[in-house]
Length: 76
Image 1 (cartoon, one colour):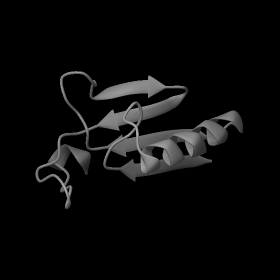
Image 2 (cartoon, rainbow, N blue to C red):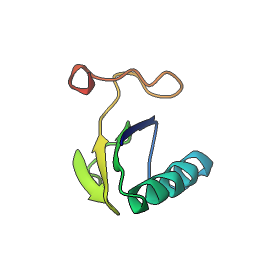
Image 3 (tube, rainbow, N blue to C red):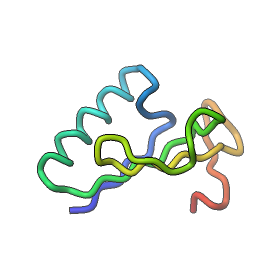
Image 4 (cartoon, rainbow, N blue to C red):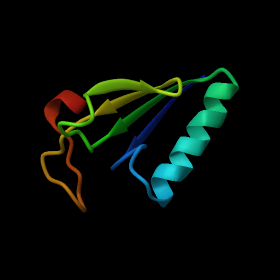
């Protein structure tokens, strides 16, 4: 199965949502599923595309940030 999660930020950021999504993704990867995370926390530290524990993480800069998180055109 292919799974996609969209979240405002993702691991290594620490928070309740980030921890829940990371734990869920780890379990899905263990069971052999393909997991992709789209997140809006791209900066100089985090590349636009990376793999974390078998999960493809795609990071974008939002057009408008908190609380709306409007995605840029390349997100769509």
